[in-house]
Image (cartoon, rainbow, N blue to C red):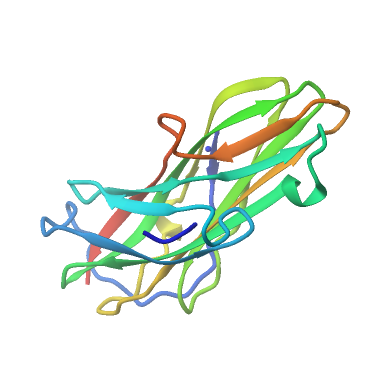
Length: 208
C-alpha cells in the first residue's frame, strides 16, 4: 500500500490513439490495478494511504482515501484550508481492449458552519496527455454529513488510453474549506474511516 460529486459534464482536451468499434461489454478477463505513487499536501508520505480495487465485473474501480481533509476556522492555518492529492495508477488491460474514464463518483464527509463553504474538484489524465478540465462542486454551510458529487463525460469526449500500451493514469483531487463569516471550525474530507465515502471511477471500454 502506498501513502496517500451534483452532476456536471467534463470537457476533455487530450490526445489518444484511435480505437475501433466499441466493446459490447467489459472484458471478462480480470482487470488489475497498481497504485504506483501518491503525493500531495492531502496525502503526505507516512500520514495517508490510498488503495484501489477493481469491481468484479470490470466496470469500475474504487479509490479509498485516508486522512484527506481540508479545514478552516477555529484556529486552522491557511495551509489547512487547501489540500490536494495525486494518485498515479497503472491499469492492466487485456489484449485487444482499451478504456476511458466515463464517470467519477466522489463522496466524503463534511461539517460546514453557517457562513462557511467547502469545495471539491478533480481531474485526471493519462501519462503523455493533457489533463481534463476541473469540475467544481461547492457546498455552502450549514451542512453536516456525507456529501456526494458525480462528474460525467459525453461519449464523444471520452479520452481512451492508447491501444497496446501501458499508460499510467493520474488522478488529481482537491479539497478546500473557507471559514467565510463563521467562527467555528469547518472541514471537508475524503476519508475511508467514514462509511460509504469511497471514490468510484467507471470505465468505458472499446476494442482496439
